[in-house]
Image 1 (cartoon, protein in one colour):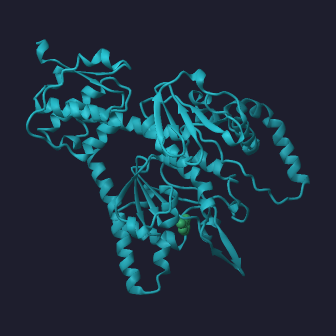
Image 2: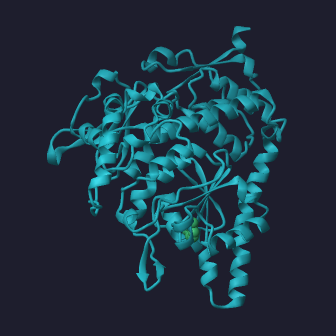
Image 3: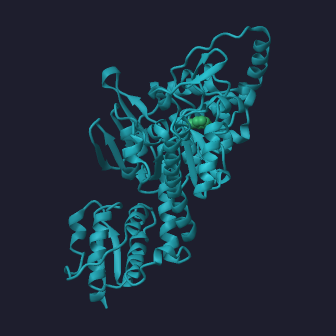
Length: 481
Ligand code: URA
């Protein structure tokens, strides 16, 4: 019996290529899942290498679907030690049962899918909760963060930080592995103990001061604050230590604010060159909307009537992103309720998408305009304004976790994909961006502006066709679920 057993030792917890190579070889040699033990090298390769007994390469190949590869690449990052065996069993069964991945109630498919989802959730959490601290001085400064991921997601999540903080050298330290960015490439090194992460410092002070400055005691909801920032995350967030003193002084500050309002004339507000509100765990859209109401991350708030935040169910499978609220939206306080919104509603309906099930938002959440007599003329938001507003989009994305983001027009595409993205070259196909599926298409107001009726009709059809891709994608996953 022992001769039939195979022990496979992978190079690391995230060694997908090693697993894939071994799994192929095992399956080609008809080695049953029950006859394989999977382990991970413990840092001393030579001690374990001798135990491996991968069968010889065999003739013939077999193909697995891209869908399986995508699922397996995510699930293998789960911390469950059974994942390698589970994935091999699924691969084994897929050879004779090609449609198996669509059988969502199958226990192996359900388990692997749940693992992949947990990994992606953890990746989003890491994007939202990593806090860098500045170490070193002036020209030589360096940014370091400590994070404890639930799963083996550091390598998966690191490119996000490399593009987001491209200009600053950083390290993210975790107990599993560490990721480092020198401005050119990401390097992965072994994990470290928490004691190696730097403590108090200047950046932390900045965050604290900022948190105190945006904290509005008149809106204090202790319970909501505590549930939205679970204790688990408090220890990594500098702003958490501000909560208690802020709560304690809230009552006094509230009466002071009321007195100030009654006696002081309105002064023009100074621009604050501060980062925007700190991110919190399990943001609800309602909580985000409330925070965004006071956003001062760019100057657009000064002339706009109000912040127009996203709207729609938190469980939405589609998140639709426009450019910025227009004149009507600015007054109503709701996205896409003016002429462009009506055009969007019509196209969605034709594509078979129920707008009530879509989360609709904008890349920039304040109306930018120049006054011309009685009219307020729309102006395109600038790149700094798009960047300043992007954290709200990120937090909406983390809260909704949609299956698909639809970017309407160039500003939305720039915000969603993090870079200027030509619409015509990229529209109408699914783009994978940091683990999120994105569909780029035109903005409905582009259709409204076309002077020629034929062109308008043609472009409208093209727009509806793009939206049908979203409908088809969701139709598919609805069948699979
Ligand atoms: N255009 C947009 O991009 N968003 C709106 O909410 C309205 C018009």
